[in-house]
Structure formats: C-alpha cells, structure tokens
Length: 327
Image 1 (cartoon, rainbow, N blue to C red):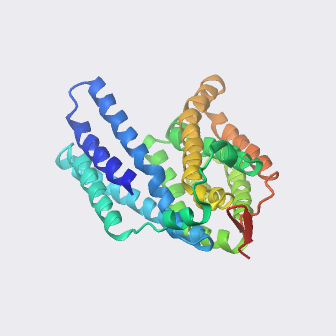
Image 2: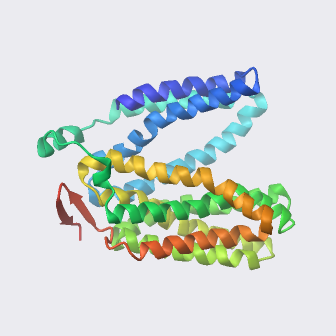
C-alpha cells in the first residue's frame, strides 16, 4: 500500500502537467515522469490481488480485473473523446482525478493481511531473485515474451497493415481491431473460470494454438467481414492466454514471492512491448506489410514450443517449499 500512496499522487500530478507542456522536451519529461511514477505502484497494485485472494480463486479474479480494465479502457476512449472536444486538457485532468479516487478506494477498503502471515511462516528469510529463476519460471517468462511480441506487434502495426496491405482506410482498420479487444473483454471472466477448472497451462496452450492459427490465416483473408470474425476469435484466444499467464507465474512460486514474480512478469511483457514494434517494423520495411502476421504467428509458434517443456500444469500452488494440489 505505501507504494500506491506515493506513486499514484505523483502519477496524477504529471498526467495533469502533460497538456500544459511548453515544448517538446517538457512533454517528453512529463511523460517519462508519469511512467516512472506509475512504475512505482503498478506491480504492487497487481500483487495485491494474489495477496488477498486464495490461490484457487486467483485465475477468476484476474479475469474480473482484466474485464474491468477493458471496460475502463472503452469508457476512457469514449469519454476522453468527448472531453477532448470541450478542452484538450480535460481528459488528462479527469484521468488524474480518477487515479486519486481509485487510490482512496483502495486505501479505504483493501486491508493487507499477507505480510503478517508470511512473516510468521518464513521468519526473516528474504527473497533472492536468483532463487526464483528456476527452470519452470524461466521457460514461462520466455514464452510470455514471445507471445507478447506477437500481440504487441500486431496491435501497434495493424492499422498500417490494413491501409497498405488490405487497402482499407485507417478508420476501418482501427475499428476492425476493436473486435479483438471487445471479444477479449467479453471472454476475460469465462477464460479465468476455464483456467481454474482445467488448468492454466492447458488453457494457455489452447489459446496460443488458436491465436497462431488466426494470425496464420489472416494474410489469406481479403474481406473485412472475415477479417473481423478472425480478429474476434483472436480476442477470445488472447483472453485464454493473458488471463491465465499471470496467475500461472504466481502459482509456480511461494506465497512470499508474489511481488517479485509480479515484477518479473511485467518486466518481460514490457520488454516485449518495447522491442516488438520496431523489430516488426524493420521486417516490414525489408519484406513488406504481408510479413506482419507471418512474424507474429512465428513468435506464437516459438512460445508454443517452449510451453511443451513446462511440466507444471498450473493446478498446483507452491507454499514455501511444499507443493499443494488444488485439484
């Protein structure tokens, strides 16, 4: 909670300052400071969920979190557009106010209990990063990197793909991509339930396989209707992957390592988000826009191959050094 109480007000401050920048350099400065402030509380905020949620319910809880996040994104785009028409600074001010309100809600209603429990069971033993990087964790983090490379690359470059490869307008391309996001949000909660019922690994493998097929078929599609149908299916498969991957990472470690594993998860996914668009952009410049989904599907195929070496099925929780079956 202290990370939230420090990072969220700072992020709100720098969000408000963005529309009042006086030069390009101050714009970049305010954006960097905002992101640094957000990095202070992002992982601790996400780690609150497994801290206060029993392991058997974490996958469903992550589905609810992502559903609410997607719903918030839809509201933000719609409401932000309306506010922007009134005044360009209004969306940023609204974002800052909502951030502060969210902080107050968390502080008022979320009571941390895990720290006391952990200290009673593990004493003064401290988490060592090297000790968390076991074979299963490294394989999972590597797979996560590759499927985020595929997702982030497509998300960043799809509008240009639609314009230059399919001959669509930018607005039609952008609207088509919303089918992916919409069906991801719709399937967020069901995929969490399915992951808890059948095992996180099985559902992730099914999601990676399905999204690979979708991305492999899309270059062959020439009509907008079929494209949107495939993107909708892709959103469902992405929900199977994304909703179950974070709880999977957490479940393969001890209860006291939740914060560390949350940080590792976001480190790897952020690295993919940083590296994927420019790398895929270079490939597109060299080969053409038709290569976008070829590279993305290849990245998913690599992730699928890595998952085959993961022995943990995602239906076990590790507490300390003991493994407890959740079946």
